[in-house]
Length: 331
Image (cartoon, rainbow, N blue to C red):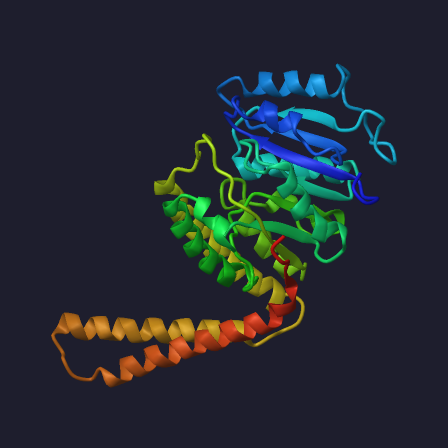
């Protein structure tokens, strides 16, 4: 337990035989139950999970349900194996559902490759336990420690941060790809976990789902941790898939938040702004193809008005969501 709350840890693992055992062995003592999900690995990840789980559990299977106050022997490790690969989001979904079923107060996600070190887990957990936020996520892009992140990842992360701000509505949040997270039972219960995206991009999707439910998110700075782990992201397929996902998240969030419960004019600003800009660009393209060098004032005016319309919508969206992000101080 941690300050009176039962704590669950979800550890997604795919081909992490070199790391997952140490992750299990070094879990913080306040973790009551750890769901270690082998996402149909092709190496010895499952053997590593079961071996270290047995050692931590004292050779006994985990108890269920978790008694109030945890158990005398501390963390219970629950090995779970998927029969087909579902992606990191799918593994986390499995762990989240088990945490809800076991009535855990707060659930953290711990990377199976060792990037979520114990002190980072505690730092991300704190705002949720304190009641400052329903969901907390790490941020490796604040402070000098971001230099530890490889440059190509840093550039890509900044680009995804900007796009996810628009998509999710958490305009003051950074580093949306950060896998070190904590979520309260209440926040986890408000979203449809089964609908969460199952591949890389699950974290961006979850943010949009939380925003639609007006859940406060804490942005928690911490150092970047990189060792010998290998990324499983295939960027040639990842970029177009996540770009499409962000657009769907954006449209779904606007529909759910601003049109599903009470009507708000904000989506209309986005709609007319995008339509005006597109119409202006198409008109300019047609004139260029026809060799018509005149008559560009009207298309340019449409583009300018469209851009201003979308900027106005973004400002309104920012103001609507300003108080839904808590930025903790560097520690």
